[in-house]
Image 1 (cartoon, rainbow, N blue to C red):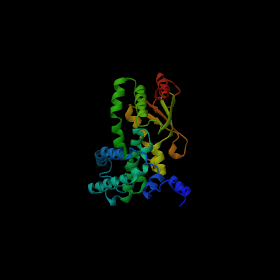
Image 2: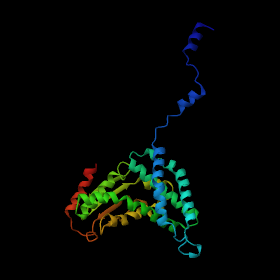
Image 3: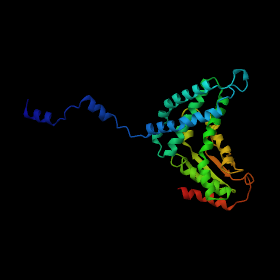
Image 4: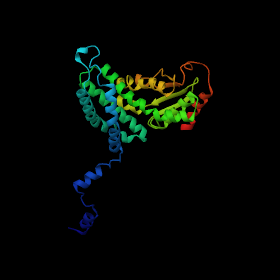
Amino acid sequence: MTGMETAKRRAEPAPRSPAAQENRSVPPVPPTRAPYEVTLVRLALWPLARWAAKRALLGRYLDRNDPARGRVTRDQMDRVLRQTWQAYDALAPGAQVGRLKTRGNRQNVLLGVFSLAVWRALLAEGIDQPYATELVTDLAWKIYEKWVVLPRLAARCAHRDPQQQMNLMLRMFLRFPFSRPGYDWQARPGDGAFALDIYRCPVRDYLRSQGEEEFMRNSWCTLDFALAQVMTKGGRYQRPHTLTAGDRVCDMKWFASADLAGSPRRTAETATAAGAESTLR
């Protein structure tokens, strides 16, 4: 071997081991909060789901058109809940909630996973899709209704005017869990109402990816009508368009009084709604 060949061989890098080559070719996996929050939401929902199921599922007809099939028994309810958690554990990793930047956004998507898991568990019991959607919505409402209790108490302590109470609650909700950047929204003035346009919804994005956008339109998207009623006495909600119907926006209006819905009168509270956008930027 000549001196030149020896120098060339010394200059060549040492061969890398297969393990080292593999580590070089595979980029490091970025850290994710998904496992922690998937478990946290599961633990929080476990008692709530059972509580809500007892009130929304137990004793309901298995088929509204065929009473001979009987009603949901406790054993059937327990089986639905077991299947729900099995489906939740299987579906949650695919939701990729670690990519969402805020805790509220991640929480809402995991609630979407939970609702889809309940729905599929009910379908596995032989319940038809429209009725299963109704049962899931009733169960979700039991939880959703409790969620507003503390914000409503705070709003009533802060304001006497019902529209200002509703405006304050909605501003709270836009901070958590319906915050940017997962949600893309714009608050705007309305006729004596809190007006809100939503252009992107991460729950809708997830359920759409699962091919279940119609399920969301007939379940999640119906809850706000009843929510307005419990936020303030006489509250009313309008939404002519919705993302899950293929529209480009969910254009919402929240009225503290049914008398104000559709009224051309613009009150001082409208200015509060108009200012919410700049306040929450």
